[in-house]
Amino acid sequence: MKLEEGLQQVNHTRIIAIVRGVEEARILDTAKALLDGGVSVMEVTLNTEGALSMIAKLQEQMGDRMFIGAGTVLDSDDAKQAINAGASFLVSPNTDEDMICYASDQEIPVYPGAMTPTEIVKAWKAGAAAVKLFPSASLGLPYLKELLAPLDRIPIIAVGGVRENNIRSYLEAGCYAVGIGGSLIDKAAIASGEYAMITAKASALMREVRAFHQTGAR
Image 1 (cartoon, one colour):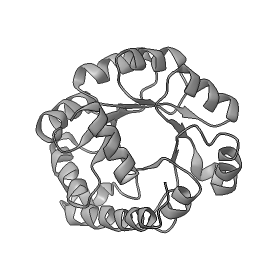
Image 2: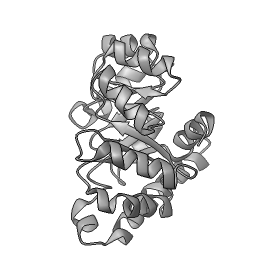
Image 3: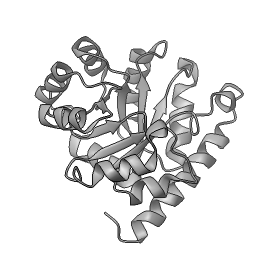
Image 4: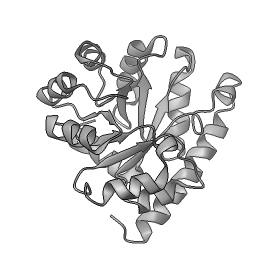
């Protein structure tokens, strides 16, 4: 998937599925279940066993239909390995300016993690395509709204605590997208082969996203 098309997918779905701790043998079925539910953007975290191999496999077999990235990218070495494996975008929990600059030089979108206004602006100026607000579950919606008032030019991705019953609140507050892990990637369901549960959760989230889009919101 071309870079522009991938970024359009993020803008359309507004959801990045965070895949952590899923067995490699189940990664393709997990991706297909997400796609069947309308979620076409996913990251595999690098602290998942076999993550680089999974990213390569997903890119080869699903890359024409999904935007596949790497998560938990802590530094430039992680970034190089992820990009070499085929990651189309990078997500990190921290702000590492060297890593951000490296990814930007490679024309790979990077979404670094930040919490304070100073960190967010620093990440943005270093070349971030958007900034991941982390941990948004602890910070809460009031913090997000206060933050976006002066920083509304910077695309923010909220990660942590986003679910079907509150995703619209995050989008209405001005988030560019949200990252969703455990509440969407149900590892127990995956382990038992109940991929329909993943599809159902993805579909429910996407219904909320569509409802948000229908309001004419950005």
